Image (tube, rainbow over all chains, first blue to last red; front, side, top):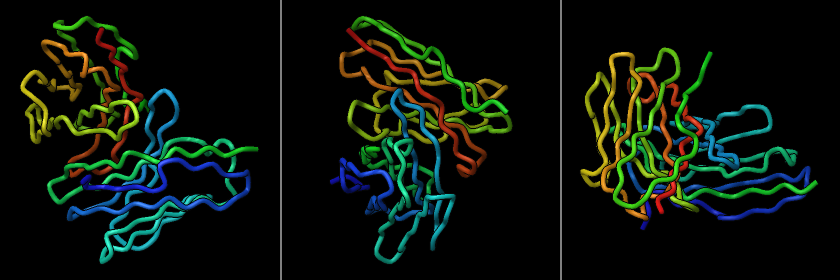
Length: 108
Length: 112
């Protein structure tokens, strides 16, 4: 069993829809990261969370430490949001465990 | 402000050969981590370098080795390449304790 599980694996949405990607982890963490990977491989760090909720533009990330669960929400989705979204758990030894990613396609 | 730079972007090697991948960290970052990402999978941690020493290592064989230079740039070396080593190799730099984690665009290695 992977230390980090994401769902769904693939997601197709119409432009404007509200999107949620879920992440569950089994390791003790110092932080939970949400990353965005575009075709070709480049990865961008979206959020680093240790508690509560963070918002950046149309992106919102939440974490429930007790339930070991995090969600990434995208409001008013746009085709440029199409990418792979990866959840990564950073343990207390500063080592990362990555989910396999959620491939999002937003259709105009 | 340059981000993390990796070279080369693509590479094709034959089985049994050796390869060296290079990473220049983001300005001000002194910690470099390397990851292997197979097709359709999340990145897997290879190792992390700090102060020119390997600080942590994932579950990778000794064929995978690295180096960090005084200017914080880093190399990943893989010896005796196997077909299964074909993957995207990602470098990430950060400040100590992984603050400001920034990924490069990766080197896509194909072993034939």
